[in-house]
Every structure is written in structure tokens, then in C-alpha cells.
Image (cartoon, rainbow, N blue to C red):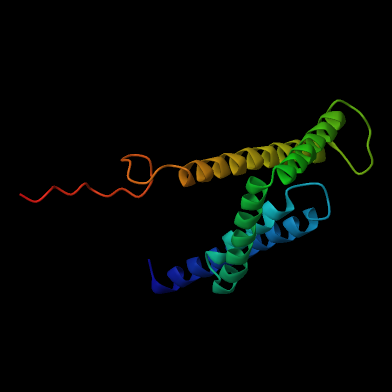
Length: 161
């Protein structure tokens, strides 16, 4: 292989990453206002772009930080978790209605499948967030000094002879 073809392959990979990442990001932005997993696609597009473009790392880090903060907030607040579960159930219900043949404006079979997947994803995120919150609370209430409990463990000192 010659040196020119290596540069050509690198350029082709960069173009493919730019096109794929750009399409994912733009689709995600559109789905922020349309039914669908917009934020997930924006993050996926930025992750693809960050493999070749250093400028994409900063917004990707920001998006990851916001996603983690959102999941933690849902985990801490039973009211937010309940609201998110209700929203997830609504997404699944609307998607199921469309798949069952009910005609709703601005929907088709693809939109219905995306709604169902989005609802299931949201419900899974809520379950994960609440589970993590319970694990954190349990760790905080474990007595220190007990081996295997995650608390601060100090080895017992031997009395001096």
C-alpha cells in the first residue's frame, strides 16, 4: 500500500464520520420537538463526531453531564420518577394505538415504533435511576467498620504485649 492511499483512507473515514455524525445529530435535533428519542440521537451523533473531531468532545461531555444529572434527579425525586413513568406509559400507549390501527395526526407505523421504544427506554431509565438511588441510600446507612458492607473498614489493632 502506498502512502497516498493511506491518506485517502483517512479522508474517506473522516467524511463518513462527519456525514453519519451530522445526520444523527440533525435527526436528534429534529426529534427534540417531534416524537422520538431526540436527546439520545444528539448524544450518539456527537459521540460519532468526537471520534474524529476534537470540537465535538466538549458538547458531548456537556450532554453526558446533563444526562447523568437528569438521571440522578429522577432517582432522588419520587414525584419526578412518577411523572416520567406516566410519560413513558403515554408514549407506549400512543404507539400501541397507532400500531393497532387508530389514526392519529402526524403518526405512522415508524413513528409508533419509535414512540414505543422511547417509552420503554424512558421506563428503563427511571427503574435504573431509582435502583441506583436506593443503592446509594443503603450504602450511606451501613455501619462503618464492618467488612464487606462498603463502609469504612479499619483493621483491628492488636493489643501490645
